[in-house]
Length: 178
Ligand SMILES: [Zn+2]
Image (tube, rainbow, N blue to C red):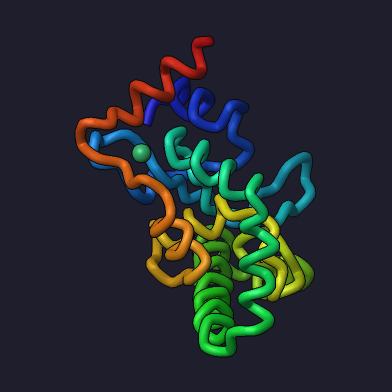
């Protein structure tokens, strides 16, 4: 991906290298996968929210859901629905493992203990509370990338999915040039 595009997609200069994990049907980036840890000015920085939803169509729709109280609704579901919670926690432990593996691969034998701890004890939304929902964008990003997040799955079922004719990339360029 061109650097310019990355800045456009994120709205800022990326602090850590990333790749495009999934694409929208029109071929534009949908979810980015960043390195889960990086070093800035000699200091280790954990980056547990390493999946970023960048499709502007999905982002807008998810923001609407958040405004309509969906975060609270999912938090309550995590408390009251055992099966849903089990599935959610299972997906989060898969993500922890994957993040740690990625980080170990990038910095073999170098990861400080406190970084390992953060990467293994934080949800995809960057919460240390495993029943904390915090942000629906990250849950949807995880579902799109790894198909193991029931909150993301429910979000995906309540938004209008991207199609080939939607031209998500074009939508992005139009919006960011405004
Ligand atoms: Zn899209």
